[in-house]
Length: 296
Image (cartoon, rainbow, N blue to C red; front, side, top):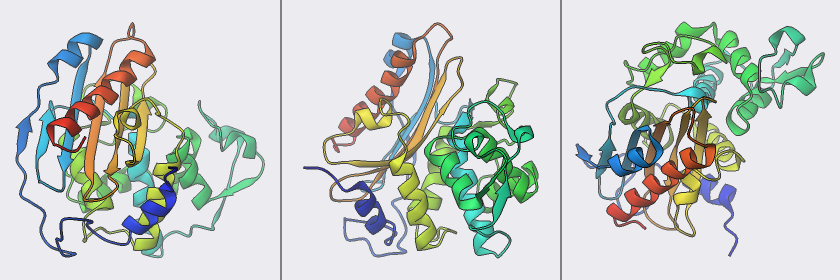
């Protein structure tokens, strides 16, 4: 049976938690990371893999290198869209505001903005383009609209993340340079929970539904988290790819019934490893985690 992903996500976005009978606003199960050995997957791909799976039904939090830093690449664009929604809610931005698109804005990977050169796109179209197809100029335009990198850092701090680095614009942020533009998988999973699951999310129900819809509709990464899901599950996710090995995917996994599982996967593979092999590591880690959690 075909799953109506947008319908499912729209319904789920209206309630802080689903399943298990926990009332809205009740505290989540206290969670301490459990060691989840993925060394075999690392050895297979010659990679350094950071992986976290947080089961909101049981409270179990599986972690492999969850406290290490990984370059996040385009996964940050989901958080950028959330930050822009917060600005809209505060009256500092409008979704329908038109933004001129110029040749000077162009950097690599511009499937939405390049065809619009010489015209304009709405803030909402830029947000959708950053999340669904990872348009890089759109991300830079949204960063500039909020006032640069410091407001993005401030957004992370506002949701309880004082650790994630924000140092460069696209596409430079994808390159390895010490700890610049890095995140820890445990922090990434906590951010996803705060924004997309918790009752105290700073996003309105409408804006959360829009973000979840874009994350569900994205055509990117079909062989990453999505490939590791049991039948009937729905995933709202954001991928990131470095082009020289880093292969990432983060998202919220919704089962047909019951509460979701949050996954943050950062696979820093080598240049010699194939894209297919890099993506398969994330799919297999997701499958292994859901099996360990009894959710497969």
